[in-house]
Length: 312
Length: 275
Image (tube, rainbow over all chains, first blue to last red; front, side):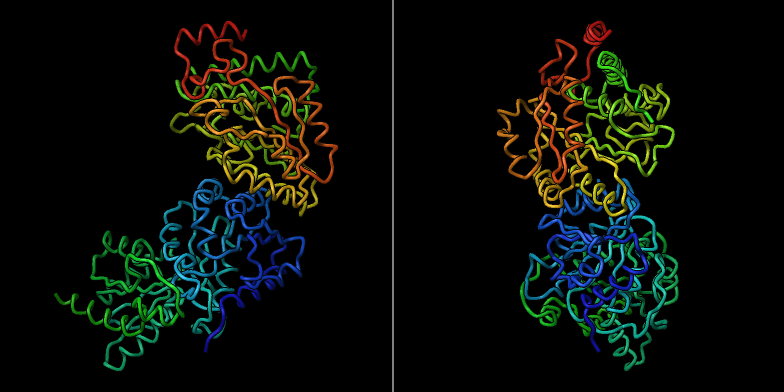
């Protein structure tokens, strides 16, 4: 079963808008594309458009936060964080302001719009900013719980969502705790650590592995920063090897975060299923996942490969 | 409240004292931006001693008027004023400014310095932040004003104009932007490096209310700030013609004093002129 990230965002903003009267949505002429016009109609006083000007959006969000409101700056990942990165650094991260940046369109899963709209570096760059919390929702259900966690958290948060329909991972809401990953299946042969739309594929890969009697531990690393070190170190010790899976460049994202930790505290073999150091292109999401190697079979073969390295 | 109701002559005396404090900071530390700090002294003195509703004993008071020094490198001018008003001990101007563990960073820091309403330093961002603050006041039903000082070189930044259109479109009339037209930017005269003329026409075409004044004349600054307060439906840009390095004859209009601190001899000579 599949559900849309953007429909989930629309529903979540409406519900959380009631719960959080301090929440204000700021967007750069993307309300329709984000499917959040319902929020605009329901809470017109708490919806601000800045037109097509992303740097301005970030400054406006920062100013709102200084008055005690909770701005949610919402746009495609490319325009929410990659275009106005310096403004985010100096006007939100450095003064540690309570701004939530919520981005759809993460990864090559964006599809037909092509490379200019596919943010494949956003997790890497946002992870480098002090004070920032970095979250990635795995599916529609987690979109809401992650957004709620972001609003509860005091401080800047980046929340990455996908564009399209995503395979359902969570059939019902599960508490989303910042700094804690979610253990989805247990197993001691290999750990598969995934985030975003790749979590569903990691679960399918674990199913495939089970057919050949291999038990994979699947972890939804929905919080890249702060990283759940305990769950990763335990996985490294108990399974002896890991595969990381993300719709993102292999440089500096989930794989990078996991490797940085393990190399310091528990060096075990790691294989990455991620995008190579190149841009995407237009195409349907599934076709792109096939072409660029973000597939269940690639995860399965990475798991088999990393297990071999374990015994070396 | 810091509305001391100082008369024009007292304001001029205060401006001279603030310039001495700025000189002292930059000379002692041998680092910081003198020229652009001197050009905004009268604006800051008028705002902080006559116009803004503030309470130095309660820097976080929600109802206070906000001030953003978008040209953040001129922090010495802001620090000298804040210290004089008692936001922090005056000796910090020389013991803390640009020093390790200091609360007075090279550029304004919201988290470290009481009285600083927004961190700044990277040019171009302040007017957008002012819009956010004005939206905040509107949403919360508070009537505070938002003042932002922008450099003329800084108006080269595209984001200034992004923010200008947002402020006008949303009729954020609580915003008053003071543009410091001192005519010199980092690499040279603005007329030569990157002319923004016609400046007044630019702001008008963005649907702002525009007032043009001598940025060192207290009566003109106070009158313009008063006009801005009365003006409804549009934000106001006060174009302040100023002199970079104002107050010290040999520093005036000298690009050298944009970022170069004075040596011993220059310091002594400048001090005499500011007494």
